Image (cartoon, rainbow, N blue to C red; front, side):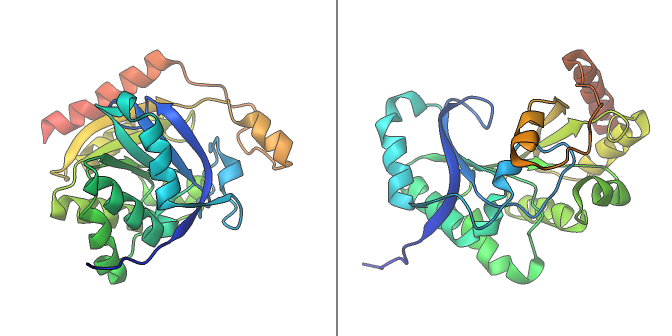
Length: 248
């Protein structure tokens, strides 16, 4: 019998009954560490790579088994932070989950994807059911300003998912004055129309629920004074994007 290498991962926290990060009720695993510095991030406590608690794959799956009866139509979602920073551990977690028939979902920005590591990513893809992909901005320069990172790896990651047939649900945060313009939304629609594996679209309204965390951590909050977006505006924004998708 093949002996697989055992890994531990740096985990920020677990949510036992998640209902917004993939289908059904899910065990949501928040990975520690993120290279992005999104101006609207509401989890700045996950940024630091060398923090969090060490957990093994078995320990996480034990948490799943405790509430397995509630996860019949759900599964496990890895989010963060950025799970792809811990690619080997994430791959091991999803491999063992799929062996047990558990639906696996990855919530990611795709920012650490690199073509020269394709073989490593393909190992992950073989145990991956669904991706929630964060498209931060429809414009390369806007993406760099908003996140501190270039957009190209995100687009390449989405194309890699398309190539192997993994469905992706795109998430886009609507930030006043940054990502909410009609031209920006239409450009997002044109961009997404090029992907055959697009399985859904979520336009998420910007909120200020993370401001207190910044105060506690002593980190300046760059969007001070920017008001939260009404859900109705996010619904209208989604229609603008969908209209562009229908035109293609």
